[in-house]
Each structure stands twice: as structure tokens, then as C-alpha cells.
Length: 349
Image (cartoon, rainbow, N blue to C red):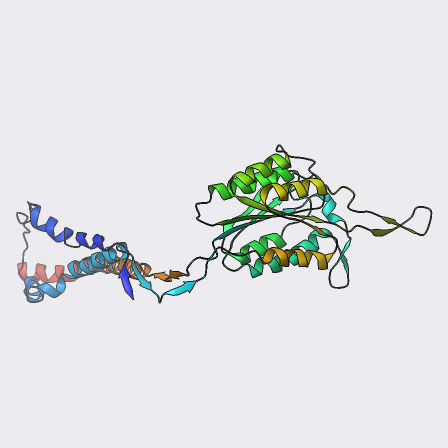
């Protein structure tokens, strides 16, 4: 279906003709005269009089160009068939730790040992792909917290920017409180009637940086209805080479502050999960994936394709054509004058 976004613009269509009728005619043009020694050239003027309407090409080109310009200004659009787009109504933020400790290679992915961030990317990317209908945002934090992607329905962009993140991008330390505060601000600023406001926060350490205490940030989250699910990532046991020979077992997650992460979840009505390997991390995201969405009716959506560039391009072509014809005629006039001059001299003699 073709329609106009701004049909009221068509009211200016008669404007040039109204101005031509109201403004006084230019004076002095008919008072000019030319003294010539011969009437030979006036035969051409008689032929032009018979084709006066056709010879006024500037008027017709200008008229059509004006019509096209006004049509382009009215914004013609093609409206497609109505589509049903499911919208869950949930705002879901992901906060991923990029501190230096995420470089610890205590996870396995595809039968090879990888660091914690690589495993997180693989599992979280699948999680994002399943969240159809949710508005998803991405926060990356280390020593500072940064909003990498605002809340959006474009899941592919969120996945791409998550995969491009790297360890140390936001600093070497961990600012858990700042990450929660940033999520609170973004969700509070978002104009939405969503009944579910969720933050999934993944970290492998304790709060060692930032300006806001994590528990204070959790209280702010509870006030705006933001439910926080915290995930503590890191293996509980890892075999490493001993300096005296052989191998010994260490706990690579000794710095993980599970007490604070549990407190954050409890204050906001969420849950705390412990991910010790890739399989556990996948199970945790599946549990979060089972959150009941807020039921809303499907939203009717009609795709709109703008077509204003076609009449605008047509007006530009006509204007260029008028300029080209005027240029050709102006270049040809001196030649016509030179060809008529010898005859005039003969008649005069």
C-alpha cells in the first residue's frame, strides 16, 4: 500500500502559480528595441510563433520538477503487510567480568582447556540467542563498568560485541558495585512497562574497585524492581606443577567472594549460582532461561519502505536537463548570429 507520511505538504503545490498571478509583471522588457538593417531573420520568428507552446520548454520542465519536489517532501512510503512480532516485555542485562583473573585457564571447551572468559562467551552467546522477545543489554566491567550495548531487541549485535570483548578491556580489578549501579541506571531510564527487570552478573572474584559497595548497589536494584542473578565462575580445584617437582592441587577460585554474591541475589529476589566448569555454567544459564516472561499480546508491525528518493531524483534529473539545454542554446546563439550577418549586409547594400 502506497501512502504519504506528510500529506499536508501537498497544499503548497499551487504556490508558484499563485505567486505568478499575484506578483506584477516585470516592466521594461517590452520597451526594448533592436534596429536591424534587414528583415531576413524575421521569417524564423514567424515559425517560432506557431510553436510557442512547445518552445516554452522551461515552463513545462519547471512545472514537473516542482510537482516531483513537493511529492518527495510529502514522504511517499510503501507500507507492507502487518506482521506479528512477539515481545516478552522483559529487560535483561548481562554484566560480564573482564578483570585479569578471568584469564585463568580452568575450563574446558571442545576437549581443550580455555580461559574463563572464552567459556563465558560460548555459553552466554547461546543464552542470548534463545532470548527471543527480550530486550537485552550488555555491561562489561573490570576496574570500571561500561555499557557496551543498551537494551535492544537486536540479539545479534549483543552477541557480536560480547565476542569482541577481551580481558583487561575495562581494567584489571573488579568493580561489582559499579556494574550493578550502571544496570540500575539504564533500566530506570528505560521507558518500558516490562514487569521483569533482570540482571545476570558473572564474576570470578571480589569487589576490589569502584565507588559503590555491592550490597548498597543491590539495595538500589531492589528499589527499582531489578532482580539480580549472580554467577560465581571458576574451578574449585586445579592441578599445577609444583616447584619441588610433581604436581599439586590448588584452588583457583580462592578470591571469589561468594558471601557478597549471595547477599546481592537475596536482597534483590534473585539467586546465586556457582559455575565450576562449562557444563555447570550451561546448566545455570538454562535455569535463568526458564524465567517466565511477562505475557503481552503480540504487537502488530507493518514494515515501511521510504520512496521519497525516487521523485527527488526525478526532480534533480529534470533540473540538470534544463541547465544542459540552456547551456547548449547559449553556445549555439553566437553561431546563428554570425551566419545571419552577411545576408543582412547584402540586403542593406
